[in-house]
Length: 280
Image (cartoon, rainbow, N blue to C red; front, side):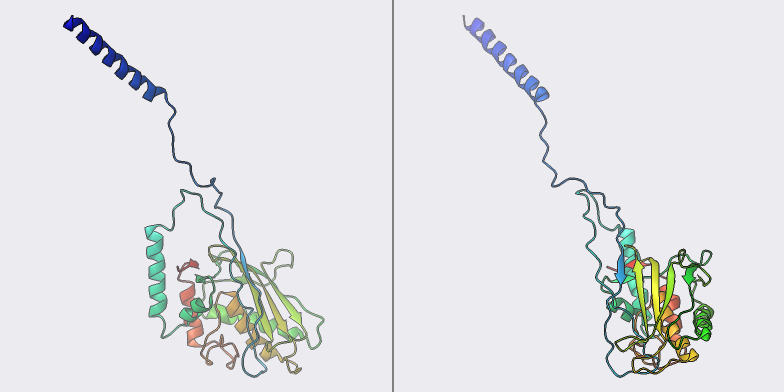
């Protein structure tokens, strides 16, 4: 009798364990829900430097400033499983910051980065074999002289002679140009030139507009050599430089010199030795 009851108990336990195993196999697997759906993070973001700002101090015949940089729009959201910069990318950025700090005595790239609201280096990328296409045409603005065009060409040549690894083709038509020069009679604020730039999310410049005046803010007509100096400053912006705090540099906000300084040249050369993009 006892043996029969024991047999029934063992049989019942076997049936219980078999049923439990079959339930675990057939039951649906529950995974934690992901927060939000996947988002395409490859959208290109562009920003434009087009906010004007007044320059402190008095006016001069060669006063030049650059439009202030607008803050970049927020980057597209990343997918839930996307990762941040790789270790190698962070290491490269750290090396770029180190080189900029080490150049503080002979360049002003540290000032350029400090003025950049997105902490990025902006420059044209790999444009030696395929020069940047520039439209440079005449104007009907009062005091415009054909010699102004030669002055701008000479300013481009001066930057090229300085050893900046970048080339511009100055005979592009307006429709195909990546950079356009415009002329106006006068600015309402203390400047005789303005450069507006557009770059992509990696800091690569993609197009620009340079506007030059034929009269200074006080109403005095600019000479050919004045226009050359203004163009030197604005082309500095066009290649990616911002203002220097040193009045002996052509990139000083209120330009007082009439040619590139050694710091202008060293800053431009170093800029084109470093990769464009964020330093964060």
